[in-house]
Image (cartoon, rainbow, N blue to C red; front, side, top):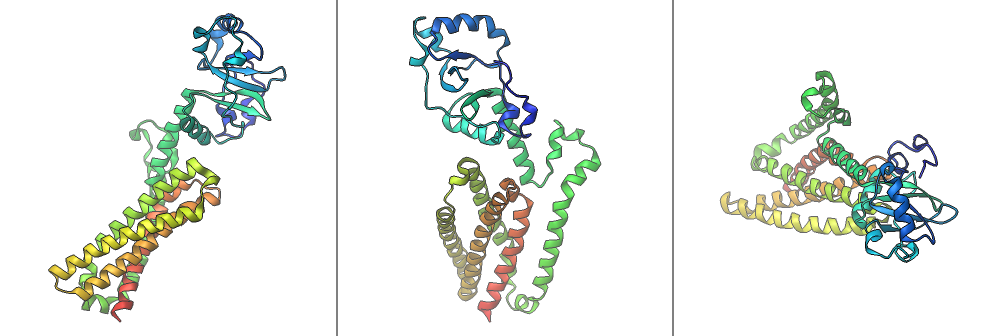
Length: 331
């Protein structure tokens, strides 16, 4: 099958750019023997041989069947009786990550590309694996706040010093200034901390737990958005995750209250710390999911929300809410 269009006309990270067009083709009504004879001649030029694609006279994709059926059926068998007609296809404009998701969900090796039913080619298995690998590396770098330009290099030691600093420093500076601003806020609570220094003892624990809850929710939401896309039920999703976070917060709060009440003999302060912690956890959970979903709605990659953006916001919000709630309850 010869290319119908130059792949360069399609968007950069689209199925059209990743598809190959030299694939096994059969015609509706053709027999297994006829297909086998033709493929024995054309096989050296084919770019994938996992499936045979059946098209009609107008070039529309009618069905697909595994190449192994050529060897397990009579040569007089018509391909119409072998092919599957419930097809998983994508348009040439479909994002490449959506293609790889479909391949995994439906357990298929290659994904056919069609335009208004007309068969254009397929995204083959080796390109699907390359897409998954690239996507994984990009997400790992985003989680760490490292620009994807690092993907140009196989070895981190090959990255020039200036490029490494340029790609990693910006978000670290954002976080630094945010935490400095938080320190100024904490300074306004000097009198409260002088009276109840124990509040500061639990700050590292609360920041860690808040980050952990936020990271878990971000990871789950990024994955679910990638798989479900527009089919995700936002209200139901947020409601369920917030209820789960509430249970986790209550259990964590009970543990902290018990520790403070038993070892510090300060049950009231223990209840204040526990309640403040639970409130900050709930704020962190909601914020974490909101950042990811907000980026998705704006057309940005939601994986970005699982990196430094969410970490900075979560840490600052946790500290502010924790001390603010504690101060209010302590009068």
